[in-house]
Image (cartoon, rainbow, N blue to C red; front, side):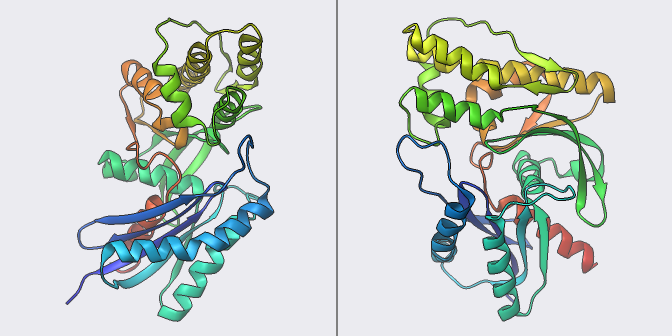
Length: 318
């Protein structure tokens, strides 16, 4: 008898992604494709994002099935249906994934489970860190990306596997937005994270930054102004890049300190595209006993959605 799989779909603002997870082994196969952004651009309108997801999603799923090499028996479909688990949380680009998920499930006669994009990021981090015991107890999670910079208190929840309560957030710019804005100003291509990291790693200077953290919340817009002034003063591009990344790291460090002071000793996990940056990860590892999503699963992906679907299905079929 062949094993069963679940299909996960995520259509975030900048990445079309799909994943297959084998229920018996936990093996995951996944594919993703960035949405096209014009050179010099700093993002996409939602209407354009939805259009590109529509054009890309069937190709991404087809390539994933091709890599697997056979047609798996699908037991359920999971999809990222909204940015986060909060009332009114909505983004049009997720409707592409939702419509596709329900279409596939209707043809196959299997259930669909909806999760938030943020929950998928957290689940991908838990999965790739190898610490599934976190599902059974409270922990703190940071979701740091181009569309979100939040710290959440995660607790077990029967309906959604876990629930996430926001306990810290940016009051202005998201960390990924700061990276991309500074990167574009330095002549890098959007999305700029990997290129900015490479540039920063070539800097041989030590940089000092002063961050703005108010309790568990932060302000990140200042770094865009700082880096703009540095560029106007012809400061080396590598130093500007390192300044930007260290500003984000020191901000996350201070937020984490304040959250642990308030809520006590909790496991901490970092997820989201910005957390694939080695400079930020290494500095946080040196400061805290914390966990990270693998570099591969830090950026937007459907693996976490597939993991949540598998856990939901097992819960319902006990």
